[in-house]
Image (cartoon, rainbow, N blue to C red; front, side, top):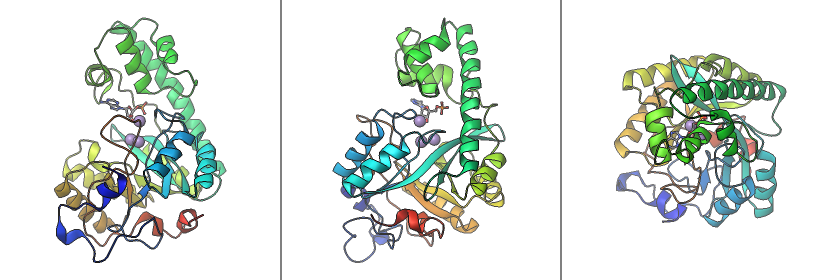
Length: 318
Ligand code: AMP
Ligand code: MN
Ligand code: MN
Ligand code: MN
């Protein structure tokens, strides 16, 4: 199934608007008309498996005309992606997925902006690089206790580009050392939420992060709100606090999502006046997701993030 099929197929006939879907992304499009767009993807600059250039090529092959690169805590891939996107006639919106903590939960915030990243964003990214470094030392110490000798060196071996270490590097090291059969089991036993290698204390708080994003003139979006395992009440609290702290958007759809939950999420976002974003959270080929993979967008009064006044210039077609 290609992006167009995925996006335009709807299990709810009432959710499709009359007339044909536009053939490519247009900033005037409503959320329900949205196709050919993906505002959450990863490259080799963080834990994705495609280079920024290769990712843009794949996006183009899949018919996307607008994309955001949102690597974890780094914008190292943005320039190369923007360059390639321009050559392919696509729009590349600069972005990043920032690691934060809120009430003991690791919450991811996508920041999107227009033009070069400003100094407060660079300061936030430096802070996060230090946090990733410190966290890697702690994860390594903890994994050594459960039998992964030389954990730090082994994780580094998984990461030839010498970018910042992430939990997937440790997961691969665990697999290679034969302590677990596969990545899934590595997360389930050692690195997933609540396990020994799930270290969050180093991340900036949600508050610090939103302040940095605000100072940088960027727009803050809650990444994949339904993937934190929060009860509906706590998700409401998160969205309340996020909005009070100056956050302006949330991902209404992140990859594959249950339609009922999407509708409910839409109502939570409408209530708080948040803009809606859409993204696959694509990391690598061969899995269930590809760039542009999105579940059905429910009908709502939500305003798309591409119509946010500060982002309108970023979404202009080249
Ligand atoms: P980090 O940002 O270093 O904390 O690593 C988190 C990343 O690990 C996520 O962005 C995913 O790409 C990956 N991840 C999380 N859970 C799993 C899992 N169960 N299996 C494989 N990868 C996962
Ligand atoms: Mn990731
Ligand atoms: Mn995430
Ligand atoms: Mn992501």
